[in-house]
Length: 229
Image 1 (cartoon, rainbow, N blue to C red):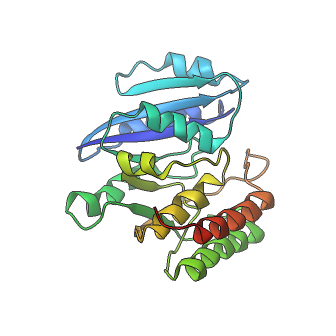
Image 2: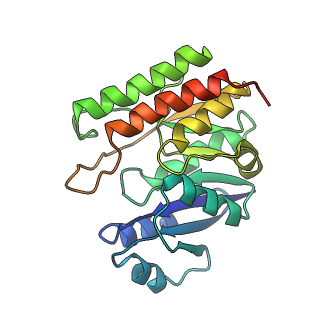
């Protein structure tokens, strides 16, 4: 099995070198590649990417910023692994947790695995961010009669062919809700494993806002109303 680690990057020069090093230093239980999409960065991101000489890294560049969903769509189109997992470059997630997501796949318990964050005073930048995340997750649980712990998690691991078949159209952060809504509509319940998490603040570059939460709720309702494919 080969794992494609998909990293969307937009103006992350302060953290990118460390994020790449952390991802490459993990002792994965299978072959892995790192597909990085520079989503129209206007800082020193491209120079940092050009300085890394590792055959496991492949870089694709967007000439203008298109959003996380669009960057992942490009990364998936360029992935050559059988499975994929998303890893942001903001250092909020620890790539050392990725082998834990792989365990249920390698032993045949699951095909789709989500990393479930536990929020605490040291791992969340605001009360309202946590409440918003829980509200979106609760809405999904009610709409689809399931019990997810963390819909908005970045760590979503699944077969590449499955992600491609979902035909995700959201260009921004709404892709998180669209992915989950389409999986649940197909009666695919993600297997969840606990992961570590440290949220960064607005001053550190946190990009998601309350508008993304409203969009996620709308997408969940839209996908629930559609007929299964």
